[in-house]
Each structure stands twice: as structure tokens, then as C-alpha cells.
Image (cartoon, rainbow, N blue to C red; front, side):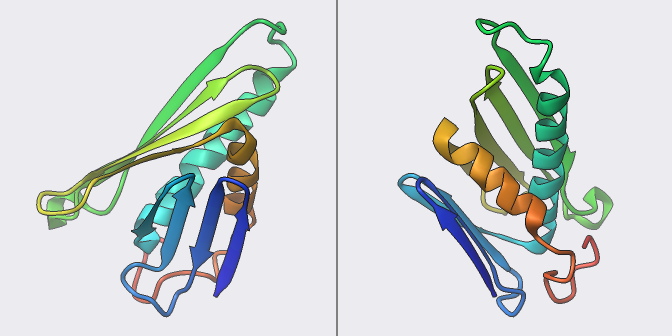
Length: 141
């Protein structure tokens, strides 16, 4: 089990807790994720933070940036549809993350977000997760 947390964020990964192998949280909220949902969150956060790093030096101090990515979760043909949307809003120095998990029919939906103070630390923790911390039986990892 890996526990990472700081002011305004929390990330716990426990592959033994299948199917919900991860817990994420922000100020006043928390939810569990499957390994596939966590992997989609990792990929989305990595994509957005890389894009932000690439453009931060060309933004003027007063310019704002808003980026988003939506990734599918599971196999829609096998009834495992759903998607994860992640948005990054801010400027060249500070930004926030917002999350929306749209479930497959009959699943649970999630909305949450992290403050500017927590977003960078949370996304860095996601980047540090090792593929070895996969959920049992989840082939997306």
C-alpha cells in the first residue's frame, strides 16, 4: 500500500483492495477508483501537466490558460464504457485541477477538484506511482 497526502489532497493505492484499488481526495471530498480509472487519471494528469510545462514560459504573467482532456475507461463494447475528464485552469505559475468521471450505465459518477496549492503536489504524486501498483486482474495497467 502507498499513501501520499498533503494539504488539500490525498492519494492511497492498495492493489489488495480490488476492484477499488485507489482512493483520491481533496478538501472535503474523497472517492475510490478502480485501477483503470486511476490509470486514466494518471495519463490525463501527465498529459495536461506536460502541456502546461511546455507553454508556461511563453505565457505572459497576466495570461490564463485552460486545458482539458477526456479519456475512455474500459471497453465500451464489453459494457465497460465511461470516461474521465480532467481540466487544468490557471496561469503560468499556479493552476487547479477539476475531475469528472462519467460512468458506464449503472456505475457511479464522480466530480471533484483540487486547489492551486494541492494540484501540483497531487499530480506529482500521480506521476510517481509505479506500474507495479496495479489492481489485481486489471489489464489496463
